Image (cartoon, rainbow, N blue to C red):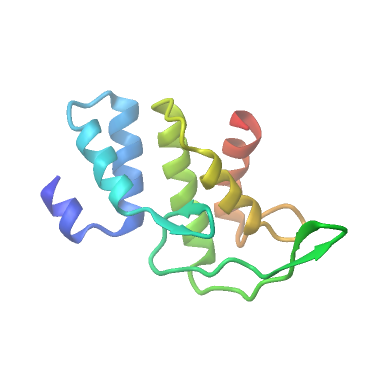
Length: 132
């Protein structure tokens, strides 16, 4: 677990934490701790990724915020996939702190309802639809 904590890529950390939670491993709690330490926070949202991702700009219309289109990020697909695995882990552990993660997902949807790629959309969509 020390190797994962010190040198682990966020993708590796999310997959290992999810797998250990599913296997009910004795190291699942330690893996979840590493996953939590790799979380990134921005604007009330929580996500996992290789580098910081800015939230899209907003504008107010009739006192309601609307997200403006955002510029693509080189790691968009990977960040969505990593965050989906992290969210499944949080839900599987019945953690209460999932709303900021779901909020991040909603800020990164494309206009067609999916995300950056087919693979990340396949992983993220069932998580969002079934659990929320």
